[in-house]
Length: 115
Image (cartoon, rainbow, N blue to C red; front, side, top):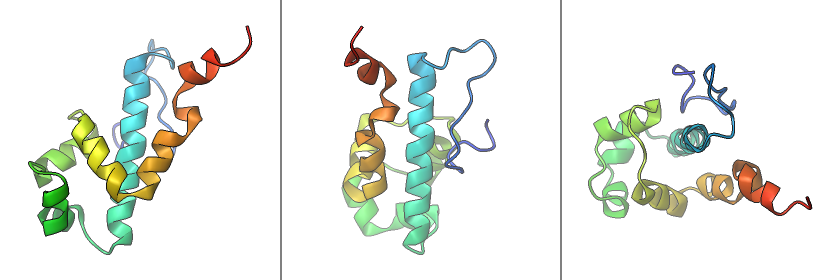
């Protein structure tokens, strides 16, 4: 799992003993998807992650973002913060699409189903 985190659009699989509906696993899955979308969005712009962080527009949209922190988020070593998510959702259509996709919110989808 660690080698694919943030580098693949393939969904993560829970570790042995971890329920796939565990909110911590779902949060990791969301971070993986967002990290991958950010990485791909940066590459489409013809930039490296380091160039992205150093760009004036990135730092004005996301104060305090460093290359080291972004890499740790991309690897799943550091949790992304709501400010990160908000900033990337403003910048990348793909991140907004991930957040709007009901399949990423299984409990919410189940709540609306008739019992």
